[in-house]
Amino acid sequence: MAAFSSSTALPILVLLLQLILLAQAHSSNRTTNVTFVLFFGDSIMDTGNNNGLLTVVKSNFHPYGQDFAGHQATGRFSNGKIATDLIASKLGVKERVPPYLGSKLGAKDLLTGVSFASAGTGYDPITAIDEAVIPMQRQLEMFKEYKENLKSMVGEERARNTTSKILYIVCAGSNDVVTYFLNPLRRLGYDIPGYAEFLKQTASSFVQDLVNLGAKLVGVLGAPPMGCLPMQRTLGGGASRDCAADLNKLAQAYNSKLSGELQSLTSKNPGTKLVYIDIYSPLLDLIQNPQKYGKPRKEKNIENKI
Image (cartoon, rainbow, N blue to C red; front, side, top):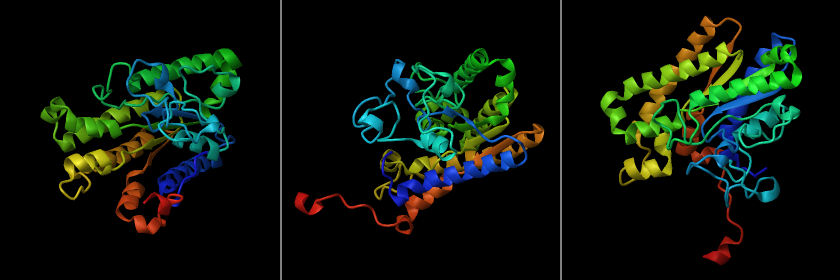
């Protein structure tokens, strides 16, 4: 596992804490604990599904993976583990989550979880950077295939009984926020509040589809402060390279709507727990108040490199 500084680890720790509390709250009312974790979404959760696809959105080359096991790039958009692996590890499920595609999945993999996520995708059908990227609806179809494979391996009754043990994590929306400002068709069709509503509805439909397929415990991440990405600060942050306000405004509007929608969906689907996970606030606080999270690590022998 890559070494994280205190500052870079904070958003992941916040996410892990929320998910652990979610899992504990779920298991306290039932006789079972979470033993499966399934992931859907974009590059934040993609552990290598894009590797075998005819897409430019890949990370199966150096320097990706330089701190991963074997120092090999796996398709994770990181130097080491990603949130997918950290979540599964912290919950005691497994240390590394395999991608659904391009993997020789055995019984242990199917009985503990996989990732269906695809870098470059989003809830909006036009967000995918190219046709090879796996859209969210296709990820649902892959999940159906997964369920059939599980049923064939362990039998219908056991497959049905284990459904309640699965924690579903959905992380998408980041690419949609950026696409809105890049695609003139979307800006002509929607203002910022209107597009936030559109995203909320598409995210809601995806979560409801998961529930219809048996999901009981779902954590859904909101969008991060996309306007604070280095590229967006350069393009839209002015001479001082501030965070691009419009992108953050859209992310905030979407997050607010998504949070309320998940509460509504929970009430409409008795027996489910659908939780909004805020990643926007801790990331923005880290960016705006870095001094709260310790000093940055100094490069070794930096005196000799000046």
